[in-house]
Image (tube, rainbow, N blue to C red; front, side, top):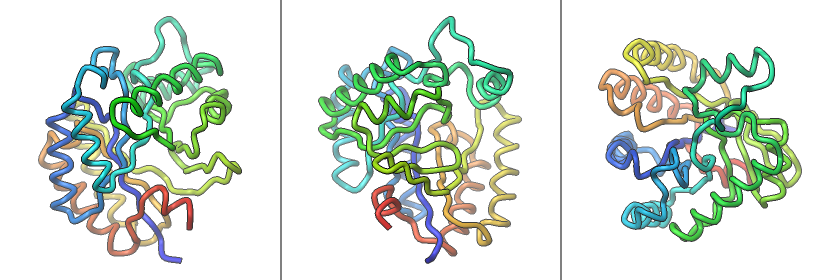
Length: 246
């Protein structure tokens, strides 16, 4: 079977509407299918979907044109006063995100509450109840799977796998993402995109996870464009539903 590729746009929130529209325009220029949208219902506790009906209408339009809607945490913030367990988890929190590992320390009850509230807000404001879940920075507590199952989530992803929660089948598809919070990280990401492009024809299924800040630097935009063009030469672009049903 031919290798497959999935495309997603993270941090979908009214806070980044300008960047999101710019990114979607680039996706069309790159002749890619509509990306899955990873929606944060109340980004940083200041950008609730309830307070931005025009943005919700925008998301409804994107959904009607083929973009899958996934839940991306609730407020995209690490809970205050709780440190990750162990040195490895603390290093992940420091390197992979800046105070946004929302689900990294949440036990079952608190995780279930946030997931359920997030699902309800997205369904009420956008008209779609997400079937999939992605934790901010892919950082999760060990109880996250149990909370997702209790909330009725059908599938979930981490950095390496997309998991069908109905039977816990794991599908290997590493996530390729970029860091653009500083100039140094941006140019490191340009180099990373180039390195992946050189080997992309020799690896299997991949996910390309874009963030609104990725579209701020022209060199990174150009590098991502070259990478997704190369990726499409050796694989089919598919939705999450198509990926899991194959």
